[in-house]
Every structure is written in structure tokens, then in C-alpha cells.
Length: 243
Image (tube, rainbow, N blue to C red; front, side, top):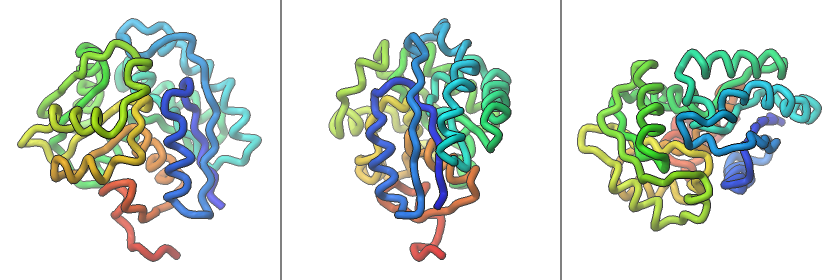
């Protein structure tokens, strides 16, 4: 049994994780611990993001007791708003507190882009424009060529909690760029787990979403590879029959 641990802010789209667990196989367990950051990280000046490391260290003890093999901070904006160095410090603190491999959704996006052998991406963010640009800067700091950034203009996570397939497809269409090899949809508050194949079909290229790459990143840390086509191109890199 491989146990994957996640620290998730609030409850916006946490139901994506049991859905993903069902698609991964019976020998993979997904454990979620909810973190209250006391604010909305969809802001450049979000005070909660700066204090995240301490809150995450406190929350990780539950995952240790559950026997997690790896832990990921399941927030994109909560990990990139202070830049790459800040995100790296955050992950380092988390790994020390957890005593296990650790990462965050933001680094999951970078590693997933590399896994697919891509360089040029478009970003479609359900963030204000200034926060969306910070995500693009984070990606560029790791050598990812961001050819376009589209912001939906939503001001808070609460505004996108009720988004379904229609809104996600519209975001994908509005955000795609002809030069992009993939589309990235950050924001773990988006319910995307049930719609990734439809999103990829809509724009004809890989789509990487926050909860998808968060789980993939935990699998990478735990040295597990899984074929799960219903989770998109990122999960089709391995043979269909698993050992």
C-alpha cells in the first residue's frame, strides 16, 4: 500500500481527492488533512500565505501518524505567491517537520511539464490578474516558457467553488494559445478531476490541473507510477498493466 498525504486549504474542491483515489487503484491511499490559513490566498498580499509554513508543520503530524509515504501542500497560490525561493523554503520546512519527502502543487506543475517533455505552456487562472502573473513568474524561474496568461478575474476561491464542466471548458477555450504545448489550470479550488479528458479533447493538447498534478507529484515522491487515462495525458506515461 502506498499512502499519499495532502495538506489541503479549506474544503473548496477536496472531493476531487477521493475521486482520484478511486481512479488510481486499490493499493494507493489518499489521506487529506485540512488546513485553515485564516484567509484567501488569491491575493498578492495574503498574510496567510506567509504564515503557511508554521501551519503546515502543525498539520503534518496527522499524516505522519497515518503512515504517509510523502506529503504535498495542496495549494498553488499558497505556495507560489512568495516566489520560487519562498516556495522552496516552505517545502524544506514541511519535509523537516514531516520526516518524509515533501513538495507543493506549484512544484508539481513544474515537474509535470518536464515529465511530458514540454517547454511552452499557456496559463488559465481563476485568479486576479496580478496573482496569475505571479504563477507565470514562478514557472519561468524554473525554465518553463509561459506564452500566455489568462485570468478569469475572479477575486476569491469562493467564487469558483461551484464551477462545473461548462465553466471549465470556457476557461480552457479562453486560455489556450496556438504556440502552447499544454494548458495549465492552477487552483486546487477548481473541481477538475472529473473533466480532464473533456478539457484535453476541447483544446487538443494536454491539460494540467492543480489537484491532478498535486496527486501526481505525491506519487512521484513515493516513486510510484500509475496509468490512469481518465486523469489525462499526464497519467498515460506508463504501461496500462501495472506490476
